[in-house]
Length: 185
Image (cartoon, rainbow, N blue to C red; front, side, top):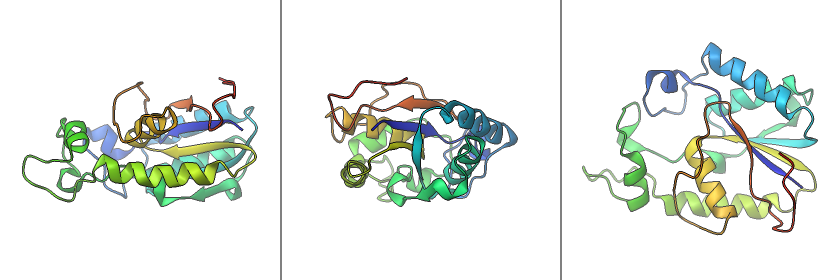
């Protein structure tokens, strides 16, 4: 089984340079990125597409699945793939968000910023469920979740560190759920 990760296409919030709320739709460029990703995944033997339930990711997943010939029925949503909660920083351009999340502290005392440890727990639960799936899986979600999920699979639980640059519409193969498995990308 191989596990692939697709970051959602460009949203209106991405285009505006702010942290997105839950309903930020894709831009035209974001829809084109989702179609391009669909062409890339067409030959990967994907048997399931699991997406964040946030609008920008779910829309990306549907477009990519249809483009790849999987159809919209191949897509299921899972709230465990939601982006890290940014609290009062939603719709702002504060560039120190990673520091707030990693240290579980906000300079203004905002307790609505989701600590990395909380997101880690939900991703550990997701990983446990993914191990039961027999086929290749595409996860469609958000950059912060990509970084954190990669860390979980690499055995570095609870650390949000920039390991790679994953642009909107970017596709990567995640470390295998079974460490003896070879990469296909």
